[in-house]
Length: 326
Image (cartoon, rainbow, N blue to C red; front, side, top):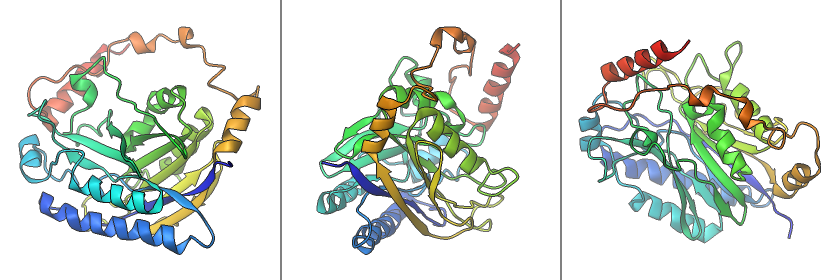
């Protein structure tokens, strides 16, 4: 059976929620967008994978972990992921959810930025942002608490092997490299990527890193970006530009930059990807990799958490790390 289908990169433009009670309305709208894409494109495209942006459920509008846990954080999985599962079961699709602010009983002083891959059989994987956008994001990295843990899941599904990473994670090539070496074929990017690092030159980091991570790992990239006006989230505006990129770094579909909801669809041909991975001798950076040649991974990095995360403590940790560099 040919393993070819379409992916939809969906972008949202919600106002920041004040309480977790508002998450339901956002889930309602994202389910509506997903169903519209699946049913509306059905005569033309078989949409089986859909992605949504970072902060689509909750935005870290506070600078205190205690307030985030009190007002916005939820456990994962939850009633919202149950609803995604019901839609996935109905249509035989997979949804990489927008991110949640997650609270975990094992870590009562922390909040995580978390996305869930949901399929017809339920939760396929849970990814927690390893590289929060510090010093502004006071969410913790799972690496802060489990330094030897495996934080980069790859789900082996009937539509291919799927990994996901969140926004700032994509500026660290090791994150996507780790997933590629675990066999990932499709990499989902969930972002709230703001200007001036958005979708337009001269600092168009959004397509730059999407294309680079696709080409260097020989993976498809399905990338959803938030698309909100500056008056919704001062001082930032989020320019959208959601896109799908193939394993050679070609942009297959891209939303025009600018605020507002949009959905773009493009083909994912897993058979072609597997064929090229097996055939190519040149530009196969995974098989050409020389891990023993590099030493920077053994140098000191960001120090461990000490006490509750605050922006001041994050700034101090960044400075400590900087002072350890040559």
